[in-house]
Image 1: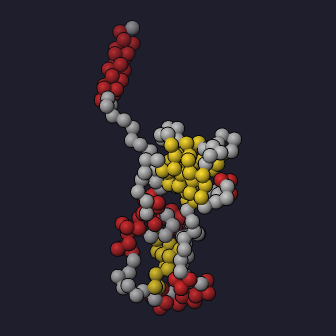
Image 2: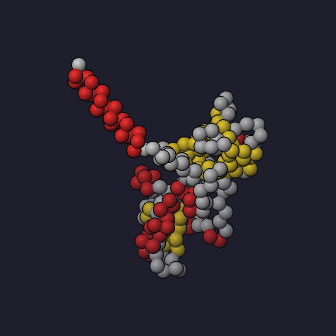
Image 3: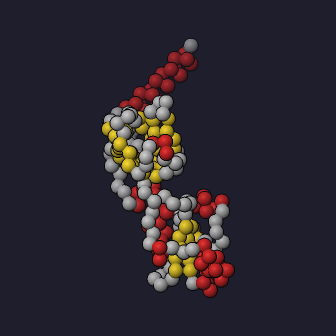
Length: 196
């Protein structure tokens, strides 16, 4: 009996210390921007930028990934304004999107959704498959090029084009001086997972 009371006293004391120690503290707000998006965009309190995970018409929710294991579940209605796509269900999974919402992180309601447009590269800056094959046959030294894989490092480790170096686009600013050549006239060819 004495042992039970002692245990109860110890547990109660520990619980009281934990609760008192966290008084006045609040949980940090959920991140609203996926790491690659941070290269161009600053976080905003009412805007989530990430990749589309899924859409549920039944529950009227849009799931947006903003971190490796962090997904926002955002409610929407018939009043949702969409730019960059004809309709919500036509947006492909993993497409980069931005959702402006009202409410807070616990009950966000989508007001507008914008789909990231495809990157535009001037035709004279593109390397054709034939030109790439010719360069690869020569190798990077003879061909005078650097081939850069800008996908996340785990994807690079799974597989990559021969002679490519990894420069994860989420760590571009951190690694660019170590990986990119000092010579500004050297041909640098970037590739990734596809058009975004």
